[in-house]
Each structure stands twice: as C-alpha cells, then as structure tokens.
Length: 251
Image (cartoon, one colour):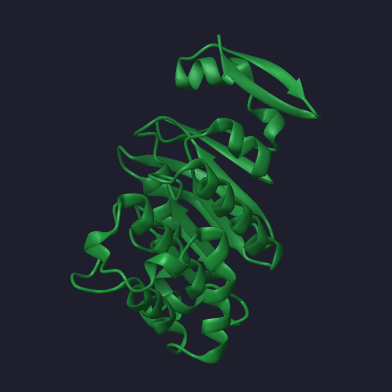
C-alpha cells in the first residue's frame, strides 16, 4: 500500500526501507526523538524525503498527487493539532468529512458508530475551547477516521496517526486501538505511533521499533525482546505470560 524506498530526513530519520500493508495495523514505538513523527509526516506527504528516494502510495509517488487527491486517499492525525477557534464539536467532525464530499446521511451514520466507543455524544455541542485535552483528542481522532471511512470514501487507503493515545484515559486508549484494528480489517493500511510497548505488542500486526532514526526491529510482537528494550529504551524488563499474552514489566 505505502512503500518507503530509502526514506531519509537528515538528522531525523532514515534511511528506512519498508511497507505499510493494506489490512494491517502497524504500530511504531521508540524513545522520544527516535524519528516516529518524521517518518509519519513523510508517509503522509507532509515532508519530502531527501535525496534520490521515493515514497509510493499504491505504486504512485506521493509527489505526483495533488492535495485533493491525497486528502481522499490518506489522512493524518498530527501531534498537537491546532483547533479552529470558536467551533463546536460537531463542526469539527463536519470538517473531517469535507475532503470526501461533506456531511451526508452516510457520514452521520459513521459518526454515530464512533460516538459510543469515543464518548462523543456529550461533546457535540460544546465549544472546543471548553473541552479538556483528552476530549479534544477524541474529536480529532473521530474526524481523522471519518476522512478515511470506507463507507464514506471508496478511495480511502492509508490512515496515519501520531500518538493518538496522548491525553486519553485508559478506556478511550483501548477504544481507539480497537477502532484502528477495525479500520485495518476494512482494508486500510493503518499506522500509529504509541508509547505503551505492551499495548503495541497486543494490538499490532507488525511493530516497528525506531532508535536514533533507524529501524531497530520490525515484525510480529515477538521481535520486541528484553534485550531490545534494554538497548533502545535503557530499561531492564522481565517478561510474564498471562493468558497466552506476553507482558513486559520494568525490573
């Protein structure tokens, strides 16, 4: 779906070779400054790779897409997104549907499906500046998901989220990961950066671990080992098995 052919941003990330695959949830982990945000920005076409390298979406270089074309085929939730002043919650969601034709009955049905897991009902009529950071984040997640909802947008291919769990309570962290899993199951390539290593190993089809701008590990959750955690995060952990799941806890 999205192919990185030696993606590089000097002093930030790269070279990175790899692919984000349709129908798969890829979660990025790594210390602060390891290159996760730079990689996601490049995958979204918001920043260019340096040198003779390419980022391809469905076989076509991102640089060859117009902005409206990109908006229909990929969506990106950035960190600390700036919110339009004076809007209410439902107006922010309406903006999320703009790249795919605006509010319609189908869009309203999609919003209704997101309302319960993300706890949106109480936020619709409130001004954004009266909401907590976590409440704003839930609306931003919903807006991003709406843009790439296959029931609304048949051109949807790629969903990118930079630290979507930031500021969320445990309930809505788990609800968000479950939604990302659902969107991957609908055929999208879904990629997100998160800081909870255990959640990454539990939910991801593939985990990418970045360290100092390079891929330190990539694969199923089994590639995330205590020795890798010690090398990359400088933390010693022990692995416990519980109901068939591996859980890593600091020593």
